[in-house]
Image (cartoon, rainbow, N blue to C red):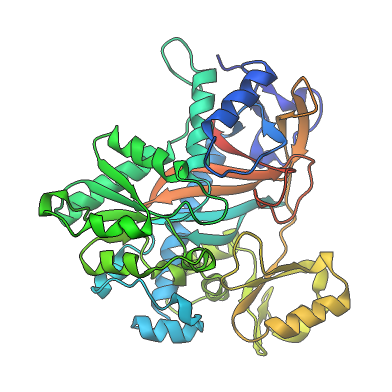
Length: 453
């Protein structure tokens, strides 16, 4: 059963946004460790030497703020991406997308654009002045969904009272995604049959990673099936009542091409009426260039929208040789970026998992100038570095018999499915270090879910 302690009782608990109350471990360390690893078994999730001892708890107001800001900014991000050009062809040119991304389009442009933002996870850190969204991940292949569901399941079993109630709030990502598909099927007037399109042949993924969600759907009123690429023909080339009219596009084109997988079965399914979300238009929302355009401001933005962007997005610009503004004054962008290395970060427009990212404070001036020169072609952004603030958590390490307290600098990932809050994923380094946090970066990285108290 859950109990709380006050992190202020012994020493400061980090930034006040995180609050001061923590859930205490509800079982011995070995039990918690075994349960957490069992839930994510055979999915390809990396081994973690350090695990959480309880869900990360933050004040209900902070939790609500994350989703309120993320939802509002997603609306602006979508409009910014779509207004770059009136057609897909125009957007491909405006974003200078690689040729590999010009595929897997729906035949109906309206449908293609409408469901581009169905599956979203911003990444944010809490800076000195509160939460700042560093990027938007817009793709049906988001990390953190199964992981958050699995953590929630473990914590529910450990912290529930005799009536099954827990003293905190958190939606389950699978339950919210199931609701999204029910609404989508009702909107389209089709049977609630959901295809989960992906592949266990992508590096670091096993079939159970997809099967767990399909099984959840099947046990909650939907008919669902996981399809490998060569099986997708069975989603549409069958009797009408056996077809799968909607599905989750749990794949990325780069991952499939790297694994030597053919994307044409996905295109065949799309061409035969299977709507896989998020659609390929999500790539424009996912591109960090869109964040740069939004940060710089669009002519149609209201004063309130401009204030919202300034409040929650760090200063971000598409990197080219041009003039722009910084803190209300005009600057020449390239000279400014070169001069202010320690305050800035370079990011490729379509970089993934912390790849193609250069933190100015981590390199010397010569390396920084070379990176800036290579990135100044309009396909990368420069962004203000947000100094991550810490919170106090309780962890379990492989080499320790008892849980211990640590200060960590988490990266938070609010999940949004069909615009609905679907849980709050978080990643951190168990040793308290900050920077680019990727769960596949090594055994020092860890993950958890965040709940509201």
